[in-house]
Length: 343
Ligand code: SF4
Image 1 (cartoon, helix red, strand yellow):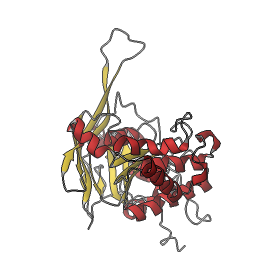
Image 2: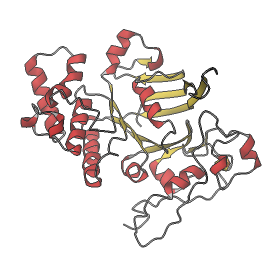
Image 3: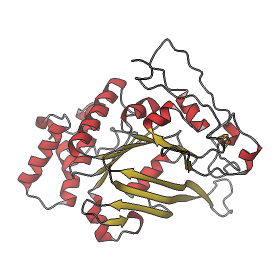
Image 4: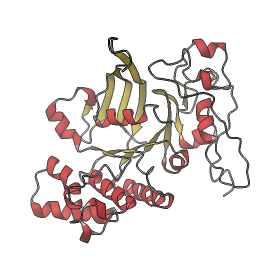
């Protein structure tokens, strides 16, 4: 059984927001992440899904410390057995562990500096984290470029000379160069064509097998998530509302929000007609969230209780966690796996 690499406990993140219309009013605290807890196992891929604005990118950034969480714990289990709380690290610890966790961003067009050669882009984290000779740096950059499918002869070129898929390979090579144990992929394939998406997903899987990397894969696209994940966490308005193995979540979702997201995933058999669940109303405003279950204004199964009581995220068996008062009773539709569909 795999060991945990990261334990996130009761993590919260709020921002102060000031209305442009009410200049003399005090800024309002907006809760973007609310009581987030989960464990990440070594070598697994945990996907975080949800609509835009649900807090999934903020969660990824809090883990890589691109932004600081307001409270909670993020315990990192280092390779040597030490346990460090990422939210309370001093400068020295930050430098020691920064190389272990990297991030790949969504847009390969804007995440790479146009003024740096591809060689310099890939080498930069290596130079920042290790003391190496020029020859060692060149050897490592060439090796990682080849592993990620880049032509080592083109490393002196600049990013604008590469296609979207090649640029994302450059971003992956840059993330891999420090030999990280965990990579947070934030919508890493969303900006790419479908055929290129498949190539990059396959590359990420191959690299995971080769280097035993753990991934947090942030995406709004459930068809991609189904293909890559061991486990999936569904987020709605800053909270995890469902967390389970990919098989269990796609086979039998237990939260009405997950069911609605799944209804948009195409069935493996094109002959099968699916009911698309259109959620009523707008995504609620995190500055003014609904009472009780935050999903209740859009939920077709809501009752009076839902409008008053916040459901806790609880284990309903087999490590399937759900935040819904009626998780055991509702019969919700999922997406058949390829096996179940007889493919
Ligand atoms: Fe819907 Fe109620 Fe469950 Fe919330 S608690 S998801 S409103 S049934």
